[in-house]
Length: 201
Image 1: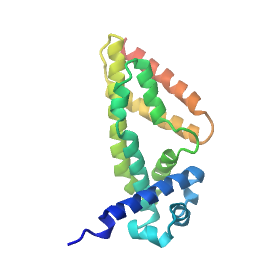
Image 2: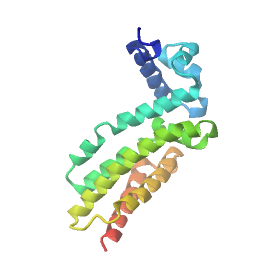
Image 3: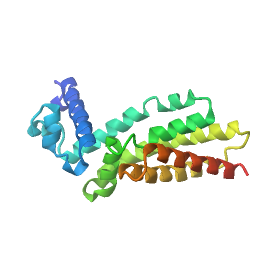
Image 4: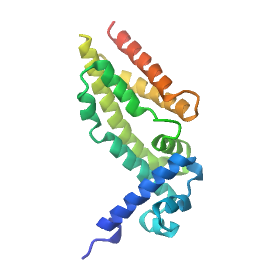
């Protein structure tokens, strides 16, 4: 029996095309303004064609953020481990976590997922998986920094949790234009140093 069209190689290629188009559209506009027509236009398709591959607009958005997080996670731990300098590794993590600018499409999608009750539950498993990966990378990075200081790592899980909360808040300020990505990075680095100093006492 031939494979269903939705799981064929061509189908996966079309799904990827739609996801890429959604990322472009979301970078250019507020998520609320990005409807199927805008995504279809960038993908060179008709809106009805998108609904052949995805059951709804929200399904497109969820697939888009899941793909984007997968791309961000791929090789991230290895790239961080390749940075021997503890501060350099911590800074690389912070830069990877925070939005590139106020138009960062992945962060715009997360805000959408967090705030919209209609899609919050569908976004939740994608967010939980992404959070676990980011948290694991931060814990390892903090342990490396603590070891370089000649100190026990302490409760790096609790520290990582607090720092991820801080980074989430900073990301929202970057997206709103209240702080620049560079300023957010420096605030985060100061908080990390303070956490490590307190843990080493």
